[in-house]
Image (cartoon, rainbow, N blue to C red; front, top):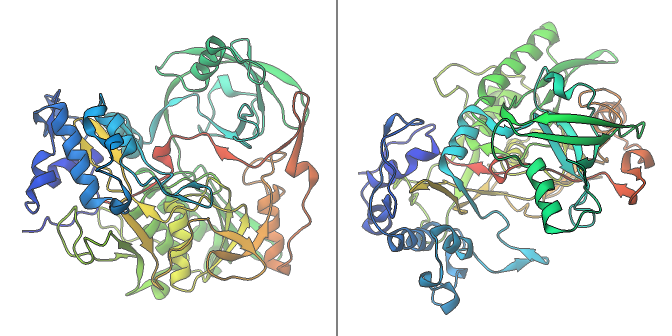
Length: 508
């Protein structure tokens, strides 16, 4: 008998679902057989851990069989190659690293999204929005040419704690704990830099020298690591543009807390727009790497409203050729994801009822964020893109927990109501819409203004495009910053985030 469909479940509960559903006994029976079983109660499910006594070979066998059955490109994994012999690997995670296609596309790996995390950490981030840090999101403008160029993309905490007072968007790291971030090359210094960038425990203190983007003035800050609860929707407000009221929404993560935050944001825009409502929405997802698919569907519904989405699909999951009609994880018939019009608890969602939306994008706009764009296009909501080409990730995971490790191995490719999902090179703004090219403008990230400021480059371009459909000329200052050590450095890059925040997760 197939498992009952659920709207959401924690990552840690996936193995419980798998082992209780029947079906193929191989990988289902091997799930939870651990060399070192966990004991006690899982705080995220309030149930006993599903682990049983097993061996490392059991864990590796589960990974092999799971991959062979559910991985989207299973036929490209050379399981029989001696280099893929599980006996060669001392840990399950080392073995998992090679269980992906070795193929390349356009000079880069075909599968760029294969990773794993400690399950407790993954659940903490997705369910509560908590992660360890300082409350700052760093951007790396060009990690290939300038791997040591880190700038403040935005402040995650609102209001910011006193230790962040004086830090502005665009500030560049000059040094950490006295180590110059550009010139340090010895292993000890690099380790100290990494320790400051990615603290491992709460309460660590690190001294940062930051250089202001606009004034080039340098200032010293002592930052203490803490458990940060990310605000996924930190700014929602309206802008008066001629006779119209335009909504602006900054949306940074498809985490579980985002559901209520998005509802509150749409309600706020509806209230501010009065009887006529907001004329347009500018959705700022330049730093949104994705997360839960159901939140993407809910947001798309709240933008488009019931008339445009009723009876239509948001997304259809395409599995590998072994599973054309039955979901290999839930053992249920494959059904499309609808435009959800209620919250997880059944409360009706508000909506703006818009026929177009402006999206501000960057190279870190990824996965579930791209699904919002693609899903809306599938029901003929015009998506106008202002910014940079997105990351190109029409793929999703079920992210099972096995023995305390959550594995992210691509199971599906998502397509919209029109059957389109071919944007592996990302969505790009252009002069005409076709396929993965959307109507809009290429505009560089602008660190001279705060996010949400009508004068900020991308937001200003969106506001202007509403009236004239003409893209502004690029600003040299918006594209480059004078940095004494490295000259002119492109200011377009990726936010320094965990891969956990750059994915599309399905729910069993």
